[in-house]
Length: 76
Image 1 (cartoon, rainbow, N blue to C red):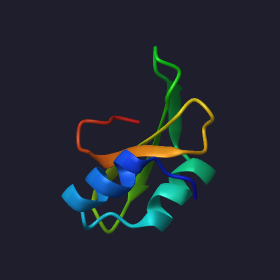
Image 2: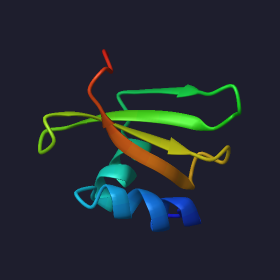
Image 3: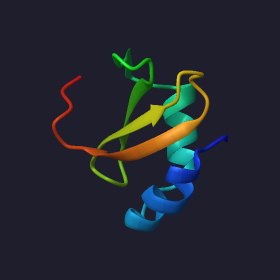
Image 4: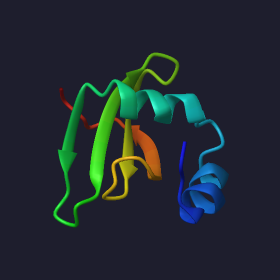
């Protein structure tokens, strides 16, 4: 999985509970996705271990993970 420096240095440090395989699964099997105005892409997947949805944001290429966090407000 390709990641940005921000993801490696900031996101994983702030959210040590995140698992890379969750992010990979979100890209492979999203329940929903949308393109942001800046062309980055948001992917959502439900993570039973978290009890909520995970939002994963990639760069424009749809492969490089830039951010990931639990999204309690997401309604499928």
